[in-house]
Structures are given as C-alpha cells and as structure tokens.
Length: 159
Image 1 (tube, rainbow, N blue to C red):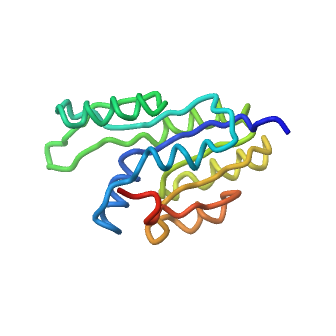
Image 2 (tube, rainbow, N blue to C red; image 1 turned 60 degrees about the vertical axis):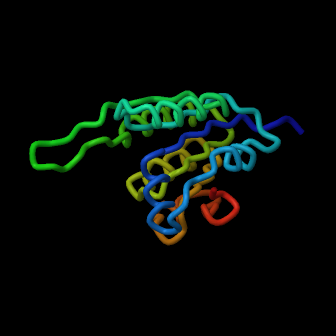
C-alpha cells in the first residue's frame, strides 16, 4: 500500500496558547511530527508563527525548520489600544486549499473553530482526510465535528 501524501499545517500561536492555558506546558513538536508523519509521505509542512524578532523565538523557529517545517512569519503588530494582531487564518486557509486539495491527508494543528468550514470543504469537495490536533477542552466543537479524526493534544504531546 503506497504511503498517503500528507500536508501538515500548524497554527503555532493557537497551539502554544491553548497548551499553556490548559496544562501550563509546551507542545512537543518532535512527538507531534512523529505521530503525524508515521507511514506517510510528507509533501508540505508549514508552521505559521508571529515574528517578534527576539532571539528565543528565532531559536524556536530554527528548531521547527530542523524538524522539517517551513516557517511562515507575520510581524507582530501592537495596536494603539494595546491589543495585538497576529492572525494567520487566511494564510492557513489559502495553503490548505492549495496543498490539501491535492493531498490524501491534511493534518491541521489548531483549536480554532473558524477552520471548520475549511475542513468540511476539503473533506466534501476533495475527499481529503483531515486530521485535527488540538487541546480537547479548548478546541471548538464545530472543528472537532468537521474533522475526519480528532487527536487531543494531551500529555503524550506535551513537554
């Protein structure tokens, strides 16, 4: 049986903040990579992050690259009212449609319910298998319901 062509897309900010909120721990990208890539042919793997320009963050981005991810960055923007902007939803959606429509499997790591219509579209129109990884108690029910399979980010995927 040939390996499934697979695309992996990670919403870094969402995974970071939900793991910190739920467990006060960090997501283990190496363990995630091992789980998501087992017996699969990875055609694209992208981690979407915010660039604050600090050294610790650059080191983290280099770790992601060493694992096998392409790292896409957006600048961190702080508004005059003190709120911050750093949303990759549109970029992730564009890449998911571009690469996921040609792959057998799309692995999406996020808990953001805004992606539920995207997941449904990929499954219905392109018959893509969509595996979603997210922190169970902080992942939108609509996203869980739209996925082919949901994998909880729990102890075995945390540092």
